[in-house]
Image (cartoon, rainbow, N blue to C red; front, side, top):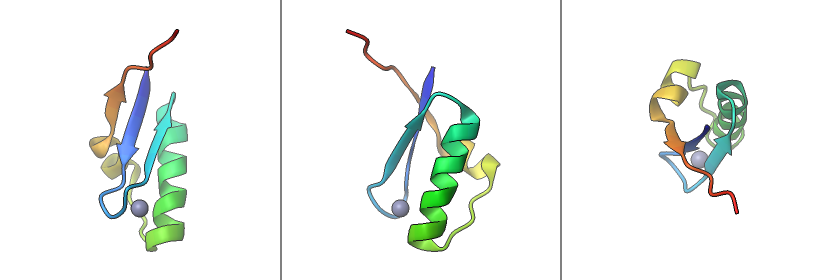
Length: 55
Ligand SMILES: [Zn+2]
């Protein structure tokens, strides 16, 4: 089950299959773009589960 996090500052979105991947990608974005260091808990609290349509 994939999860998605949308950045609250810009329109960036990241989607990943594992929490670890999601957190790592979002942390990198927040750090590079906004100089933020969100915690794993904060990121996962913002995450939404998404259904990936498979053809
Ligand atoms: Zn952003």
